Image (tube, rainbow, N blue to C red; front, side, top):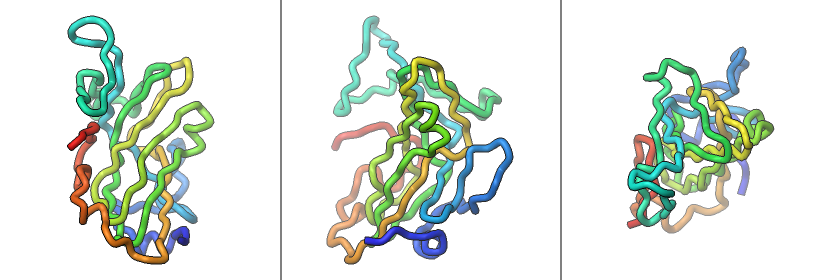
Length: 190
């Protein structure tokens, strides 16, 4: 396996919109870098809250996940450039970019150091060969303080690994449940 460099990412991976990684004063960086692509977080966030409509605490169950555990915040509607994630909580969001991963490439996501140094952790499962769509990302605030996340700015980096051989069954072949997702997608079990 090899890691793709900037020119290979441009040639082999479909990313829309594709941005160069240039200095943007006062912004968390995004766009293609030497050996990765820094993605932007979009403007819609689902912020986790421990409020149960029937009183008491809700239980997080991946097999019966309820969006009642979240409040939706759209920074375009609030007129703010950020969202606040409560202490020791998390939010789900989506990338601005749409990806189309080739059959012989796997993408791994890592958080940006700007946020990591503030106790903000980003998690995304690998983007498998032939996966397509906007990426739903989980942003955890591990600190005891509220944290600002800036919409339409860098949040994480995708690193692309090119396989020595093409896989026999891709994500598209198996009809993956998150294929072609266009918006922030909550967990689902088939």
